[in-house]
Image 1 (cartoon, helix red, strand yellow):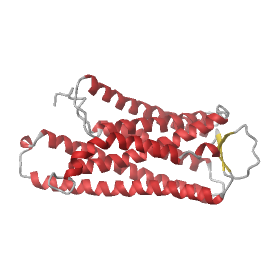
Image 2 (cartoon, one colour):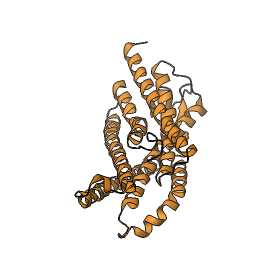
Image 3 (cartoon, one colour):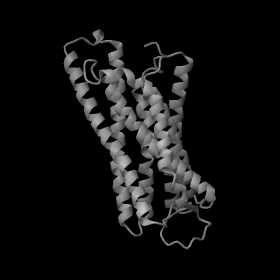
Image 4 (cartoon, one colour):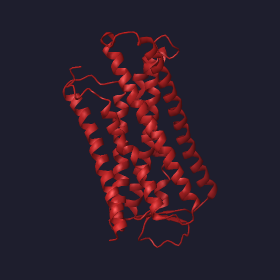
Amino acid sequence: MATRDLSIGMMFLLQTIIGILGNFSLVYRFLFLYFTGCKFRSTDLILKHLTVANLLVILSKGVPETMAAFGLKLFLKDIGCKLVFYVHRVGRDVSIGTTCLLSVFQVIMISPSISRWAELKVKAPNYTGASNILCWILNMMLNILVPFHMTDKRNNTNIKKKIDHGYCYAVFSGNIITQSLYILLVLFSHGFCLVLMVWASGSMIFLLHRHQQRVQYIHRNNLAPRSSLEIRATQSILVLVSTFVSLWTLSSIFLICLAFFNKPSLWLKNISTLIAACFPTVSPYILMSHDPRVSRFCFA
């Protein structure tokens, strides 16, 4: 095995291990809070779905990419390729959707009770479960065509338009209009979520700034504990959304480069894949670093 392939394999392996450990640590925190009788935040249900989606992305992308980088190219059959890529696409899109839902929900929850969001603020916690389930169903339906475009490398297809993912082929055939409409639908859904996240981030910054102005002359010990916890939670979501938008923008730039080059280099493909898997890897550490509940044994 070449030194370059070994280095790439180690990078994928390290990223996959860090991502799995981080997300399972977040699962452990939720279990710890449950068994110790701690009160869950209104956003914790969304975070649980986000964690599941991130684990699906890491397991369906990080593990196969690591195996392919270490020289195992034919470990998946046709049904395996279809399943792995379908799970990855659904997990990726649910991760985007739940991050968007998380940011919008937090804006509603920290808005003043006298604002126009007051009525929605009371009702919003009752709809988080249904919103998460709807997000899963919509993305499962949206990506239903993905398995039809994937095949294993043993399949000696005569179709010229194909992309080699190292361990599977993505083939492009059929109606060009249908494929274009599908791509536009995916881009619209991602763009819509991105716009909502940017709006929610700006709104959270504005609300935090107003809150800071109101309490700047009040001693820290006189602040209500709930207010302090809400600010901490808002800051973690703000960092999470900012990280997602930054990585999404960087990943989009690399995808555009891959689309424009007829024969993109292996280095470009691998860097693009690594960046695309960065958010599911780092997001649990961002959330845990801003969550003091477990470290204080829930006595706060």
